[in-house]
Image (cartoon, rainbow, N blue to C red; front, side, top):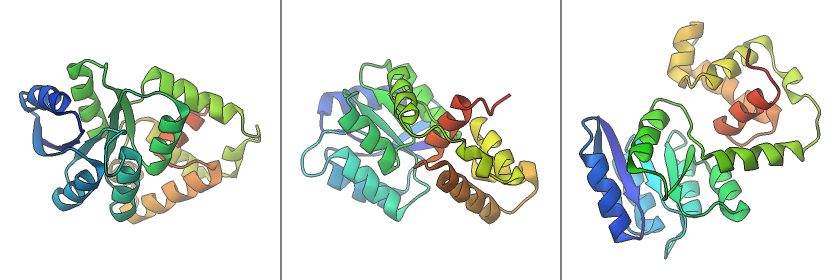
Length: 210
């Protein structure tokens, strides 16, 4: 069962999406909050598998709430569910540590599938968000940063593009989970990206995936 905390200040949105998700045989809503401050506290208390996070809320917005959660709990998987696609929301949300980015105009079934995919370690981004990230990366120097990766780090990166979790990568490569986490940290640093999602986008952009 995938345990979900839903943070959104629109009651009707919470009711609608929560009702649909709760009806799924593999998803359980374990908590709800109507602002970022309460949402962050609830998420850190319950430690759910997935956090659905609105961005524009009173008291504390979703970007700051995401940042606070990730600072204390780096493994948290946060799906932004918002109405906004402007640069001032997309980039800060992903840089704060959000794993996936969905729009409120998405079908409830798409959000449910995003919950399942994100839970499995596969980031889900709206096509417009992927396009924005690609454009941003094109604006950076075109040096091949991936050439700095070791052979093992490249193996880890390619497994990341397959949506593998750290534990799955450790099992596939027969190495310790702690070692995988070190490799992932090195990869993010060498590729000059903020998170796994951006690392995966980098790999596809530079045709590292066969």
